[in-house]
Length: 104
Image (cartoon, rainbow, N blue to C red; front, side, top):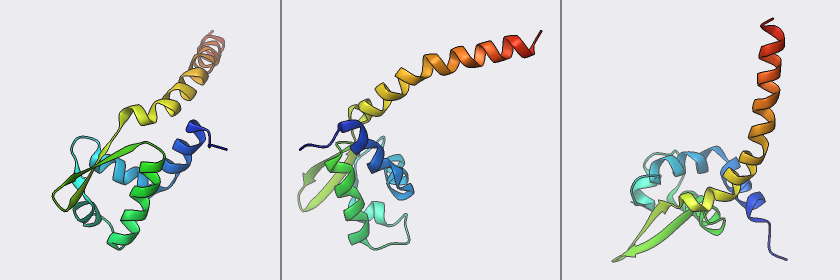
């Protein structure tokens, strides 16, 4: 049974190094070696993190010769955004009510 896209995306970005990797590749593609230079783990460990991010659909990989380049897929985070947008109006309404109550 395929995993829920929202759950898979949340699980992928739950790990701090994966979030840091996303920040590195959000604007431009980077190779595994370039990404690994920013961490105190092996290139193989970075590759495993990239595999999780790729399987969750939040990064894309392209080949440039022998190099694998990774870049963030903003649409891959769409399930998370949609989930949070469902919660946001209710949270804002409660905040507005609390501020209005406390401000009187």
